[in-house]
Amino acid sequence: MLRIIPLGGLGEVGKNMTVYEAAGETIVVDAGLAFPRDEHLGVDLVLPDFGYLEGKRVRAVVLTHGHEDHVGALPYLLREVDVDQVVATRLTLGLIKSKLDEHGLGQKAELVEAGPGDEPLVIGPFRIELIRVAHSIPDSVALVIETGAGRVLHTGDWKLDHTPVDGLRTDVGKLAEIGNRGVDLLLGDSTNAERPGSTGSERLVGEAFRTLFPLRTGRILVASFASNIHRMQQAADVAIECGRKVTVVGRSMRKNLNIARNLGYVEIPEDAIVRPDEAMELPPDRMLALCTGSQGEPMSALTRIAYGDHPSLGVEPGDTVIISAKPVPGNELRVHDSINQLARAGAEVLHEEIAPVHVSGHACQEELRTMLSLLRPRYAMPIHGEYRMLAAHAKLAREAGVPEDRVLLADNGSVVELSRGGARIVDRIESGVTFVDGLRVGDVQDVALRDRRKLADDGVLIVVTTLASSNGNEIAPPELIARGFAESAARGAARRGGPRRSPARHGPVHRDQAPPGAHPRCDRADRLRPHEAPADGAPGRDRGLS
Ligand SMILES: [Zn+2]
Ligand SMILES: [Zn+2]
Image 1: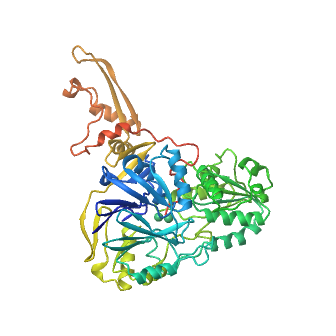
Image 2: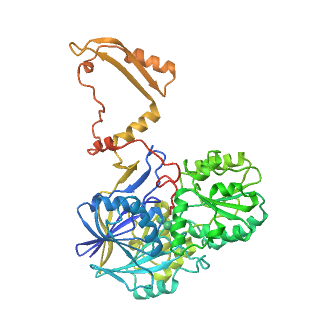
Image 3: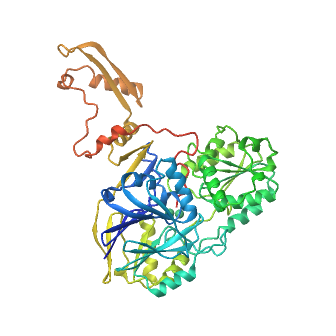
């Protein structure tokens, strides 16, 4: 009997994490984070709820690739749950190693490098094989997870790129072979299941750069996800051919590029790279800046450049800014602000709506059909996507011949059981979200967040009254402090709720009076503190999501 429990990534884009249990042993596939949404006022990161794993020993966390929605929660997981090993490919391991070191968790679990083509890993009752897939970050893999209960294929994020930048294609031959061996259950990436056709090759973006760059006489700035290493490679290659030097702006991008260069995933000659201040000294047609900020993140390099607030880089008429990414849902307005501001500064801004400067990293319908026909799974369970994407993927599975009752539309917290008799959803466990605010970890019902919402909606009115300790009488006129009110409204409130005798004034002053039903763990709010963002690349602000 194999139990599969998604703790995140279903019904949402982000925080992918799936628990696999067999014979009393547990492994976890991916441990990702999500972007906070507008209602998560002041929250920096959103993590899966690890409550289900508390007190359990996890034999291994196996990572499919290095995007933040798959690895970003790992440091927080390692802090709360005992994990023996973290298994990943070379680049993924390089990226998480630096992340764990930053969190002081370098020794918390054994890091094990694995790759496609290696002998299958045997971890307790699990036999795990890695299969190469193409995606928007190098070294991505799908997983074949076998137990006595059957064979599961967990795709991770993937697309069929026939001309990937590193030449490493999705291993279609291997997938066909696994399909011939027989796949009992497919857990498949659903991100683009609503989109017809096929996703373009990453190389198309390089071709767009090759068309665009030689015609530009000003500075060129390319903003992308800090994890999109092949995008940076392609931009740098074309720029160098055009006689430009390359500068890298934004903490996360510099960090990722260094790791990727050290491990041999990116090749940019040392003499082609200059510091940002040196780049600004060069003639405009001699420089390319690779920068963070493709999501309009407030403290990111591109946003600061757009607002004339960056210490070394700026734009002026004649410059070109290429936003080589698609806004993650929820970030559109910020990206539009950024584009407007850059245009105001005189730059020409090219983005995916007007130029072919971005391709997705996920399979569209035709590719999903190909995967389904290569594997011919007995059961299919769409993962990685909002509900409508899961539903679209379910439809494709049915069209590919998976019977209606064998397509499992699960949620975060669903418990799926696979045995020789088949797969079905048998139960559900509590699965919520965990917020990270500054460096502290809290939960969804935090009074701090509720108070922030109230403050944002209503404003705050503070009444200061001074009472004598002897008899509780007022010994000074009350003082009113209003924020977020028109002055007249504040005065009205003062008249209505002003100095009147009320029983409460004799009692102790409650700092926070939670309403009935407030979450029992709301005391955690005390540990929250206001968001403190570092100057650039705040943790999770520029994230290679998806
Ligand atoms: Zn993803
Ligand atoms: Zn991804």
